[in-house]
Length: 489
Image (tube, rainbow, N blue to C red):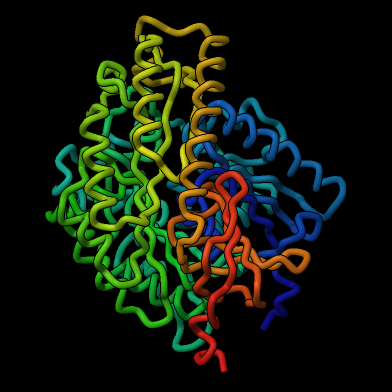
């Protein structure tokens, strides 16, 4: 048998969102199953693979910069090839390959099921013919319920391609074959679904991610069970739109029955749901999220704006009264729930009155985290052709103004938690500081909680009382021993 160190090595770089993290776990698993060794040091890799993001202009620039940086390792290390995959690679395909000499190959989603074979051929000097992009929404039927039967032959990242392609399948002992855990933190994203059926006028994601396709509950549960065996304590359920989960499986309320199944998995302690559409929030889903054991009271609600006229031009729905009513219903069911959202400022046709409507809404909503983004044209979207484009300098000024307001509001919301008892998942220990996240804080973007008073270990879940704040971040004193002290001993 070939020694592990003799295997062809690959370094995988992941950009973008948690959905890309899931795709990288699949790519890593397929590469490992195909005879590659994953390495952390790009200078020790025979190939560097960059999983790109293609969401907005800045993300695309970051992806190109990362590919150019990866090419440097062909001079400083042993790398023979730089390969681009992911959303930007899928979205631009041959155009990207023709204009970016630093990338030795640009691979699309259809290459994923044989990613090891593709990479072997590239390293052998074969020229890969990059794909010509197409609107991936057209690959499957318009009717959601007709998609599952029509999926054969369609590659959807993060989904099993068929009975013989079990993404979480493993030998009787040893690691899974087609899923490789990247990193060793206590949280891991888990994909619910891919694609999106909405037609938001500012968003290009459905064109390259495709129509909405749910993973089956059995597939999701099997992967979550595997995650629990490799040290994951929190699963972060991700998709373009989690509140639509099950629509193509014939049950729009399938998330309500999936959450209790995940809650029964030994070893998992937190289940977190991301990206919920306000217009799709139903009483049963709110109830399931606040009453199911292990599901943390966390609501990632995609408001995007509050002015009705702007929302209509965005091809979205709602108004301040509806949104505030939803927030009130959530807090009535779970008073300490975390609620976060993103908003876009400067959308074509937005007026100063619309900006004030949004500001008034944010002030009344008292959200725990708010991302404020200035609008910019995204090629291929309906919004590019809308009238009433706001001057870019004015977009920046409005975004800065709303960002300052949001920062002040989330700081006040954090201060409201002083004296509150929270459960915290320990994620790192830096220079003696124990840092984690409270149940209302989502990964990476919603702030952190620094623990004082007692020692703890990465992966511990501890009870603590909030004593002070710094912006959105909390400081909390540990009240008792970690929940799993007895389990570890």
